[in-house]
Amino acid sequence: MKKFKQIAEFGKKLMALGEMENALELISKEAKQLLNAERCSIFIVDKEDEMLWTKLSDGIGRIVIALDAGIVGDTYQKAKPQIVNSPYDDPRFLKTIDKKSGYVTKNIIAVPIFNSKREVMGIIQLLNKFRFDFDDADLETLTFFANYISGSLELVLMNENN
Image (cartoon, rainbow, N blue to C red; front, top):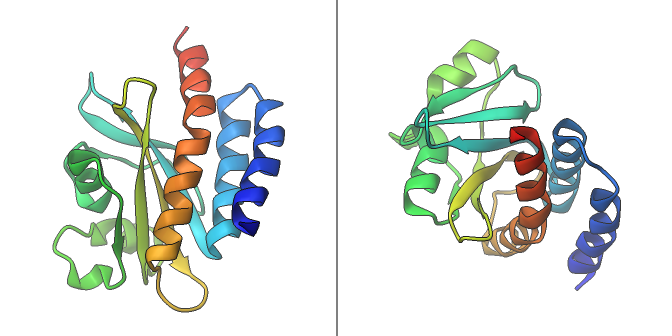
């Protein structure tokens, strides 16, 4: 219950923001605190160009990948959250991003963010939980969080496109 109250308090801060960068930065910071993770990326779905891109990703520049690439792409395709606690053993993992950035990914949790039509509009991905691996409790928390922020994110995206 404590985490859900924390999310509700966060909602008050989020509603005060209008610009996408500010909203995504706040979402990222909160998600990392909730799950005790090192990094957060928020991928936005671009159906027209058939890609996922980050407007915000910790410690690395913009990431652009195909809709079916990597664990994030698989999360988009299946529209289901997932945990990968041994990414280097997973054939879907995009090792080139770690190689390019010099970062070492130890574990991943990725959750779809649905719009009001129940279509995936984004994926929130967290990397490297500080202690232990990601678990079902983390999945439940991040899924709740993704559902909670979805309306705000949809409004921000609509404003960006106008």
